[in-house]
Image (tube, rainbow over all chains, first blue to last red; front, side, top):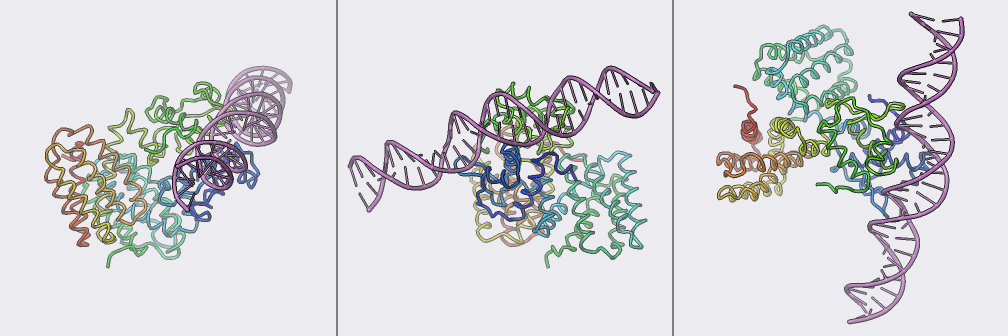
Length: 233
Length: 233
DNA sequence: TGTGATGTATAAGTCTGACTTTTTGGTTGC
DNA sequence: GCAACCAAAAAGTCAGACTTATACATCACA
């Protein structure tokens, strides 16, 4: 995704970050900078930079005379894209996927409603194009093409909402969608009902019908929740 | 909030972070590590650590032969609590407050619905206690006491949702609420209707009525949006 | 025996200076 | 005008010496 291993400290992070988020070092574990520097065969300066970054993500805490302490998961900056990526790549991928899908179900409908009010003509056109692309790739095992348009669709919605916080979730949603396609229903064509919903959302946004856009997007996200068996009986 | 100035690099961040998020260095500005180190009267090692942290927040990008480039706001990790705090303390506080309030309006109703399903008896009790505290402080200019219980109420809802991503928004919501009280309607007693809504939400959660909890919480957040004049005509 | 003052070892924190590597931008030569 | 080449600039890396805070143990005193 981002440039991996931009410098030695980046390489260290690519190993340590996933290890910590995977729970390899339980909360409370204590690491020593010098030992880590030796283990990764880097200088202490480089190791310190890596620790500082982990510290800014609230993954660890560095204290004098003690060492580098691993913090409990409830302290982590779970919205940090890097942390999300590490967790998605590791053991608690399912848990992370569920959390993110629930977040989507909260955010995307509201974002769609805002998009209906604020989307520029260009964004409306983009949205329609994405929806059409989804339709065109919805049959005949064209999962890859479908996915690309699906990700683009949701990204445009989030951006067009005009809310910077929503917009920044574009990458996250894209990774959730990609993950879903790669693991769950890889071989079957997407649900035709879902495809129709996307087309209708594009319509609603184009017409500036905020309520309808929100309601339809809520239906989409309900579908995503059901795929992961997150629902009340 | 968090320990300020934990080490020299922390002090540098406390100055540089707010400066960058306030737009003092426009996107594309180039800084040099050595110059910064001199300006802050710290060694290059310390300065490098600070830059690494800013880099992990996507506030800047460091490239060889070029320097430390300030990135455009659309790249920033706007969910980083540190970044949020810096922005709330700076010039675009109003903009940040609006973004966060819209985010609240999306997340909190869904969180309340989940809380109705998953809240433990202890959490239900806490919730009721918070609501009662709000009632008790709702008259006679007891804004401070009211605020404390209001913040606690929303934090419990977010935690009880059982979703880690929601739970981590507790601090953010608390700061939004605190900011609102300190700036807008500081002198008037809170809207009685809002107080009643909180009591009713606590009720709905206790009874496990997810739909009602969600609907009522949506009313609360609509009120918050209206206070900031965020609404469609 | 319990409690407070004192000492000490430890690991992070800081600074400095030398060296390496990458990259930009200009210069040269065809 | 274009290619190859060169030199300067800034980040990146490393090693070593020194400083500082602090957890823990020790000891003295009540």
